Amino acid sequence: MSARWLRGAAATAVTAAFLLPAALLSAGPALAHAAEAPQAPAKGLTQAPTRAKPAPSTVAKRLLRAWLRGDRHAASRVATPGAVSAIFSYPYRAPDEFAGCSGNSCRFVHTSVRVPGGLDGLLMVVSGAKVTKVYQSRHLVKPSAAARHLFDAWRAHDRNRGLEIASATAVRTLFRTKYDPRGVKHYFQGCEPEPKGYSCAYSYEGGAMFMHVRGSKSRGYEVTSIGYIAD
Picture 1 (cartoon, rainbow, N blue to C red):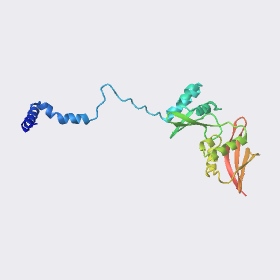
Picture 2: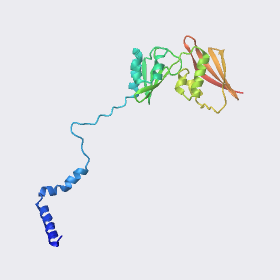
Picture 3: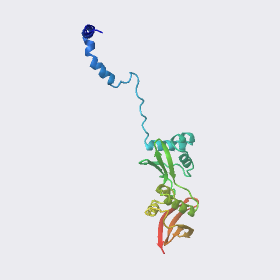
Picture 4: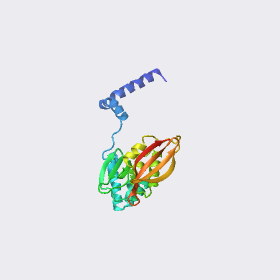
């Protein structure tokens, strides 16, 4: 290939570059920038909105309304099976006042009927869009059952469970000390009559705990106070 031919080809390429439209040459950098930029969504296509999580009070009230209607199917849409079973086994008439929510725990209380325990109705624990736990005032027909229920709540570190069958004072007294499964063992000694009710005892090395129970078989029993003695 001759040097004359190479010089001719180079000259032809330069001449062709000058013959390109000026607008196309000036648009080169802009086209490159456009290729790198993110593409906007096509018109008419919008991102689906994120559904807001309902407030705990909204979820709790939906479950209460489903229960009042006797509608288990509707209740199952807003509560777990355990929560549905719990509320549909409630032994008293429906609480008549919404007492608000503390965090994700919402309460419905009685204003016209006296029930055992400091819970005074229903407490619903809400997670996301469902009620996952329902605490309820209990109707226990034996003093020993009330004492055992409170002790089991203490052992499980569950204050709300304790309030199902005990006064706020009794629960506060008992829960001042955290139950230690590796600590002293408690032995239930049964219940004995005392003025106005029963005294149910748990003995342990070095002393004993007495749960003072009040109520009746028809009204239900509750632990109203707790005392201790040392050997």
